[in-house]
Image (cartoon, rainbow, N blue to C red; front, side):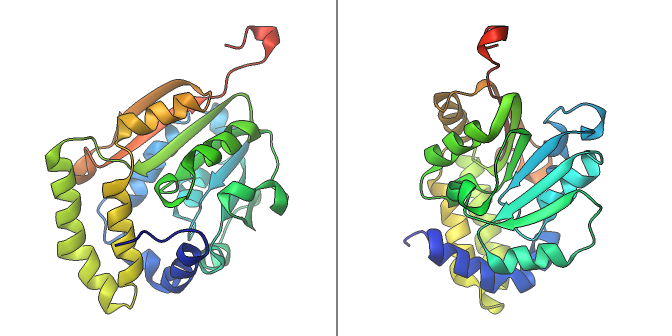
Length: 243
């Protein structure tokens, strides 16, 4: 099948927004894994006084993870889907959490400007048309030495990783999503993982974007070899040697 992109993908997410939280809740460890990746940003003091960008926030699961792990941070949560963003914004949030509708490639047009001390992107990069352009945009909005954590279904490269992912999608996710009228979106999400970078290949993409200290960190449970956190940081300024 042809993967969904841009407006078509946003429209599919709009339609699926009503049942999205129910489906992800069936994934053991989904929210805990997001919190684990948020902690891997390594921000001090619970994020006190820091600005964090949640890029591709969906219905707010990643935002909730950040708000829990970083209670002192100001969080700007962004998504291209009006339906997903509406669901997210309806939930109760502490002060300092704001939501903005914008494609990841056009943040400035929506008034989302850096510098941010950290960027968190969950399940985003395999769904954008040009991942390298989005990584470039992320680098530009990060403060010097600012941190990036990408939480993504990026396979480890073994045949078993692909087989487990496909088995879960075909045996559980796709039948339920089809009954809910969202089969087209979830077929895209299955294929988007199979056709996207492996975790190591994505890490190389992050390095090519000019980010440093890139590491690929596995996640436990059934998602081992399927979901990874890729962490990195923007280099410092010339005055500190660009470290």
